[in-house]
Length: 88
Image (cartoon, rainbow, N blue to C red; front, side, top):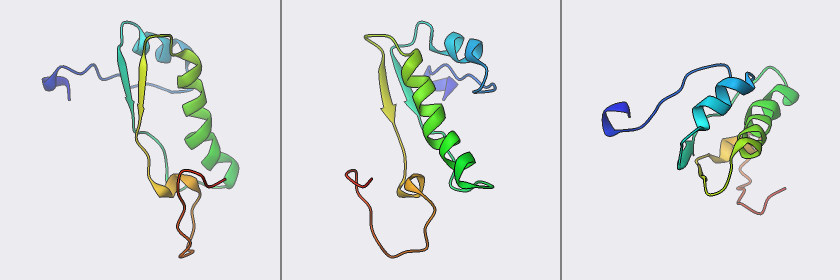
């Protein structure tokens, strides 16, 4: 990605200063992090929802967020039930 001109930041997402630094001077954030497995439901949602919320709180207009996800982010499931964007 860096060879294509993207700035890539690696760090602890719990460290607000790293997140703030990564977002400085950025027009667009392509966010595709997350997990499809966790030790428990709380950890699962902290990674998939909590981190997303922190990024949204740090963004400032006119920055844009491109959010990439999968159905697995809705909750681990063995069900044949399909979910869409309106699922709660």
